[in-house]
Length: 240
Image 1 (cartoon, helix red, strand yellow):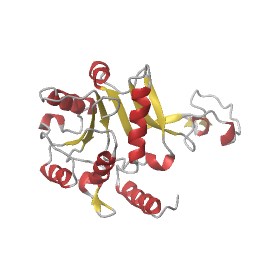
Image 2 (cartoon, one colour; image 1 turned 180 degrees about the horizontal axis):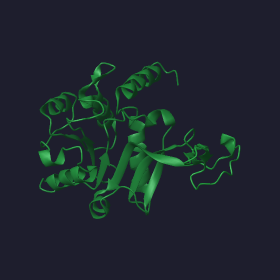
Image 3 (cartoon, rainbow, N blue to C red; image 1 turned 180 degrees about the vertical axis):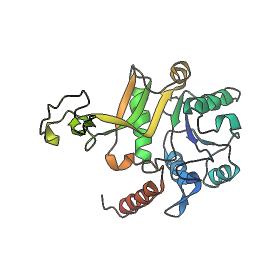
Image 4 (cartoon, rainbow, N blue to C red; image 1 turned 90 degrees about the horizontal axis):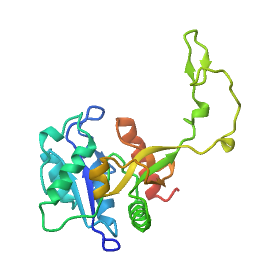
C-alpha cells in the first residue's frame, strides 16, 4: 500500500510459447524465469499482493513455490497466442471485484523482463500516485543504434533511401540526435478505473519511466536467455 492506495502486482505467465517453448519455467541462474519477477514483486515496499495469472499447472506450482499467489486458473480462451494482455488484466480485475478487498492500482510485470529491480517497481508507484494528473506510467528505453536517423529503406533499384523516399542523408553523431524512446516492457502501472475504461496503459495521461538499456532485454528466444544470464551474473558481481 502507498498513500492508502492498494496495489495489485500481476504477472501473466502462459504455458504456451512459440519462440522459446516453456520459457516461463526455463532455468535462469538456477531459478525459473518467472521466479525472478515474482521475487522482485514480493520485495516491493508497496505491492499489496503479487499474483500469477496462468492456465498452466506447472507454472502455477512454480509460482506458489516462490511465494506468489495463484487465486484462479486462467480460462483457456484467455490463454491463446492471440489473447490480448488487456483481456487477461480485466479478467483478474473482475475476479477481485468479487472479493472482500479490492485494489486501486494494477501493476503489470512481464516475466520476460527479469532484469528490473524492486527499486524500479517502487519508484514507479511513488511517481504515479504522487502525480496530480497522470493515470498510468510505463517504462521506456532510449533508442540509440536503431535511432530513426540511422535507419533506411531499400528502393526497387537497390539504393538506400530515407523512410520518406529521399536521399538527404546527414552524418550525425549520437550526441546531436534528439532523444527518442521505445516501449520496452519492464513495468506498466495504472489506476484500475483508467485501465478498465481506456483498456490500455498508453494514453494522454501516461508518464514515462526511463530505464537503462541493459534492463530492457526481453526473453523471447534462447539467445535472450543467454544474454540475460550473463547480465545477471555481472550485476550480481557488481560489475556495473
